[in-house]
Image (cartoon, rainbow, N blue to C red; front, side, top):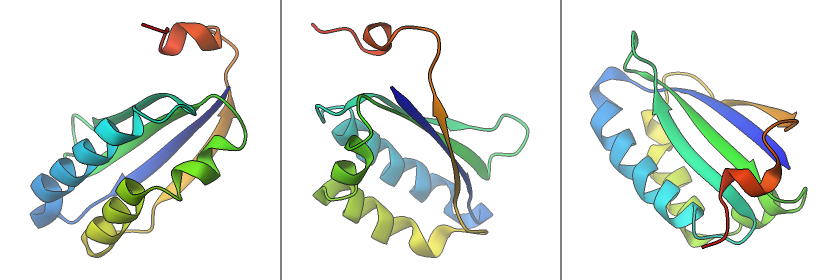
Length: 105
């Protein structure tokens, strides 16, 4: 399982619009078979800072995610909202097991 944390800082006047666009992207992303979990969190002491938590089932899933219409819609919508470039770090999950992230229904 590949976990990607994307750090985002948005302009203060764009916080609400960023949250709307990112919630839409997360809803659609969580329907992708290659994604175990996709979450958006907002920093408590700085509402302009967010982290996207992207848990991928395979190493190929991030590339497939970036080919989706919802990702392109999000990317284009939030581009002008950035106060700084997005930065991501990739991690390999150790615990919990992959099937505990988003167990099958």
